[in-house]
Image 1 (cartoon, rainbow, N blue to C red):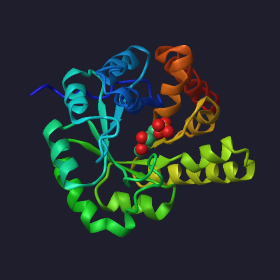
Image 2 (image 1 turned 90 degrees about the vertical axis):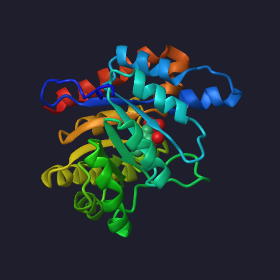
Image 3 (image 1 turned 45 degrees about the vertical axis):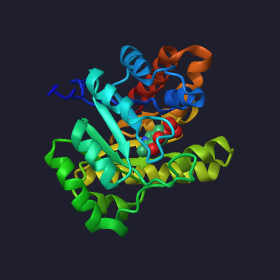
Image 4 (image 1 turned 60 degrees about the vertical axis):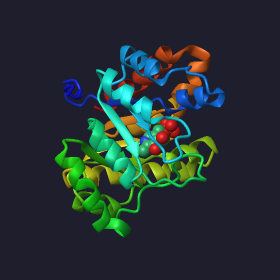
Length: 260
Ligand code: PXP
């Protein structure tokens, strides 16, 4: 079996950028053609400075397909972060491909995108049982949670190594001009990142991030990785994917350096 790609060794404090390629597949699937190819986008993202590739295999297969996951697993030299719901079908797929990381997300068929974090507290026993074989297979398991201390503590109890903090409410507040809500959401993310790191979890963040919202999140020193998709794929229409990723990387690095 092919050796699984691991994150490259980087300078301490390096903030990793995981590029989510789901919406390349969304465009492909709109016409049922083989193009644009998300695997080609992943290879381009690697050259443009991504540290990892994220793909969400949804239950309804609305964008990424099973074949995409198989091809990404074979082709990528970057670590693959497989986002999925905690279902038996997805567990079997993850155990077959053994990606570097598995990020568990809540999923509802009717939603446009992942709407909230996992309710880990409500499902502790089931999630602990679900996660154990993935950890045994060598996958780094991450739970996508709202920035709430109780959810983060539950994530640790069920055996996750990582929490990914949901930045959607912060980004929505920013783009809707609700400055007080944005500041409150940012403070929640800051406190959650500190708490998660203090109890020994690796901290990631993502959802809805753009050039305008990435800085304050990238500046949080506890955060090790950001996962960004929708904005980058949209921006790529205007400037190309490599330029969009390069600019995001520059903004992340500037914020991190400024915070040092
Ligand atoms: N992280 C998680 C867990 C997600 O579900 C998503 C959306 O698929 C992202 C990050 C990326 O969000 P966006 O596409 O809005 O950048």
